[in-house]
Image (cartoon, rainbow, N blue to C red; front, side):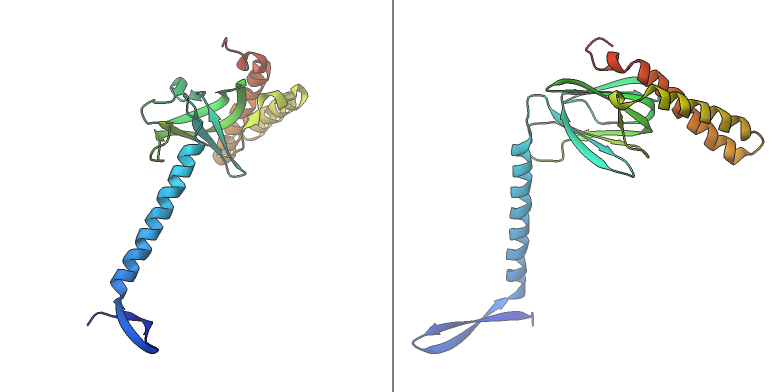
Length: 201
């Protein structure tokens, strides 16, 4: 016999108990949860600015940030890669370099220490954007306008020395080469910071 729950009703002063199957109760709970999920999805869709804008998530071990943009350009392993709303899903490794974002106010540029880019179809039913982009990196993205020449040059010098001292130790040498590669890309990002913030790149 299936388990059931009881509820009491009053008729003419006398209490009467009627059985309500648990399956019906659980069904109504599931329906409520589905309704809540649909409402949340619709609210998210209504917040989408539309007009060619789509969300880009910068995620690292230190932080996570979502930006609404019109276009993103990244330094992929196979060369420069641009993404607009509606592009087919794609996944690519990233080199150390500049990520450019076109927003309502123009272009923004960030230095990323390698990572992975993942572009998927919108996971929000009814949304006005067709693409969602996620950029994962071990370090937080750095605004190119915040790069300081003396600090960039000092990091490059330290990385060069570390490569020299690591000779003969495979593990240390691999780590030093990775740091040197990142330090070598930063001076380029510093020199091209102004150009990265314009339409002509």
